[in-house]
Amino acid sequence: MAIEKTSDKPECAQQALDLLNCVTQSPFDQDKCLHLLNALRDCVVSKKVKKFSLAEQGKQEASPTSKKA
Image 1 (cartoon, rainbow, N blue to C red):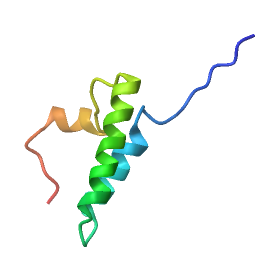
Image 2: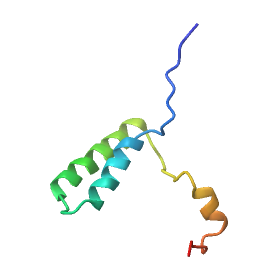
Image 3: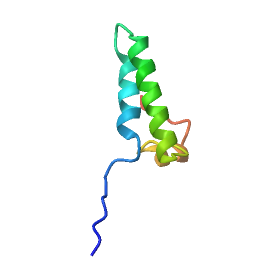
Image 4: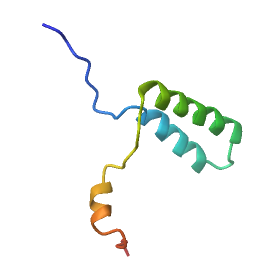
């Protein structure tokens, strides 16, 4: 019986999250964020990721103009 490795996280999710969190930090550390951008790019290329989507994107596509007040 073969054991497959499964993960709950999408490919490169941690690298994407790290980059997003980096750009929100103050003061902005461009060198750190550039390093994280390169790490994300390397992951995307190596894992052949074609597209990212957000968990709630399906709901937003149904009503793209609605915003919480």
